[in-house]
Image (cartoon, rainbow, N blue to C red; front, side):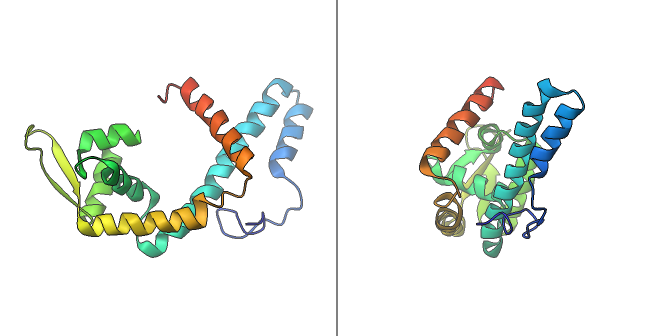
Length: 176
């Protein structure tokens, strides 16, 4: 994927220069040298997130599922029983309970999961993967593996380095 086709909007800006590198230069010109590299790193990370999310969403869109809903399906797929309490889903995905409820509502409406009272804790809701949900999770994973994960537009060594750097960032933030 080239820089001209990989932006979140689907079409490159055609600027002919890196706007983040230019912003870094402007930071330095303003006397903000100590913050310039950090600004460039954070802004680059945020832009990379937009680019990658656009690729993921474009791959999942024909299947009628968003990445947030795909994550719920896969969490259920990997669970021992194919079901988990709503609270556990939110905790493992590290999202607000409202986000889990929204995703589960949409998945339930599509017949991809069912929701029921937990058999051992009436206060908890249990979400279970349906056969249709399992099928969609498989198709979505195949598409993502082929179109995105196996082709991250980085070499293998860069991928490993990126994962290491981001893991350190996440660990330092208390993510795990």
